[in-house]
Image 1 (tube, rainbow, N blue to C red):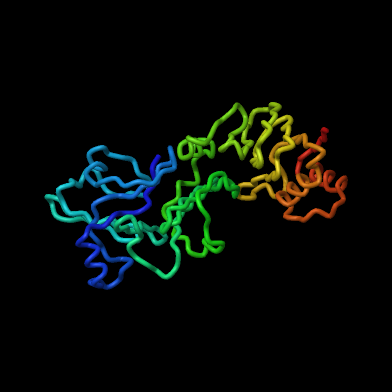
Image 2: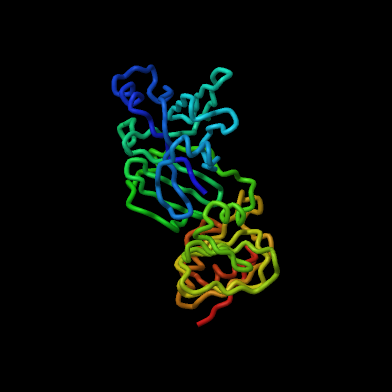
Length: 304
């Protein structure tokens, strides 16, 4: 799968940009001759010509160029707000962007329009976020808030400067969407989704036992799961229950037993307490484990 990073403008468009021949730099249309993409198969950035894009009918998420109504022989323009303007034998056509959409413009492999702050753009799903720094093409991929893949460093305040573009949709099954978008780093094993060998997502509705493989650092348990037992390895640093829209309050839908390593017991119980009740641990381990069992349907067994 490929994501739109931005459009490459022509030499003439760059001259127009630098000479200030426009009313609003962010909504003005500039002629383009290529598309900058982020390839989620190999996590590379590269440029695709408009001609190759049209003739190969490439699927680039976020790109609105219409195969049916556009030919490479016609002029094509874009603005930074997701808008496309093109001409064909029947005249011209606008495809307008949405309020929070962006389609950055590049020239000579650099962001063409400066706004006084570093630019970041994000693709969002309810389970994951892909953030790209436009100046350096550093990127970060987070799944349920955990960083699973990252290239380069971001400014600590980068979220203040993010430009959003259309999300991936919130209605798709999480396992399907993760497999579609991040299939090069996602493996599904029976009852668990592993992401880049660092995160395990427990989302099975089958009443089974499952042992999460050692080496995993983060575990996310969806509140609708229906396991008998989930064995957590000692490599896990953080465990979190994702409660979706919170419709079930502080309780799992089905009773679940977690088998936790003694060496990480205090930390993981504190994580569960935070997930289910948004409470910090008091250190009263037995009391907290009893609260999780009675109020959240999470029974804890200890090994090691």
